[in-house]
Length: 208
Ligand SMILES: [Zn+2]
Image (cartoon, rainbow, N blue to C red; front, side):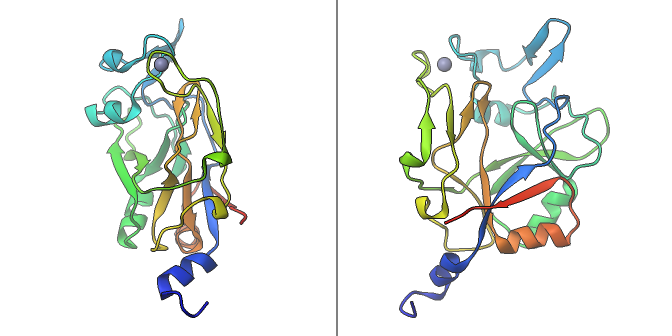
């Protein structure tokens, strides 16, 4: 035990958590919108849609900008869109940045209710054992899996050297509507969010 460098020892001892939004409200949309005929992909992303499975390349869409997204969430600092994208308030972003927490990219999501809201994408992808996931069929056109489900234990992922990070696995869970990043972090970041009084975050311990 004492032969290990301090940071490595710390990450082995650290408790890790998965972060979930308390509310996945059906009226928050990032790439699509609900209307009389059902759900329609926002204009500007049409060429990113797979003709077969209808998924879009979410990362390319985020880089193009989110001028048409529909955010109705008024209170929570952490919430999910109908599609499964995680969103945060300006206060959430500032809290993490002030503490030097790394591992997220923020995409401004303009909205009609006058809130500063950001879609977050985890950039620190750690290796996870494939056996921790259940893979559905592959789309014959875009080769993406139709569904990927799983929640690896801490023994099935390579934990980072720094505790002040939010991370995800190199395998991204997918539902039929698209990507849903699984966000994980150490107990220090969970405590930071809790102490800041940020609303809407659920943290579940990842068991070794
Ligand atoms: Zn496809």
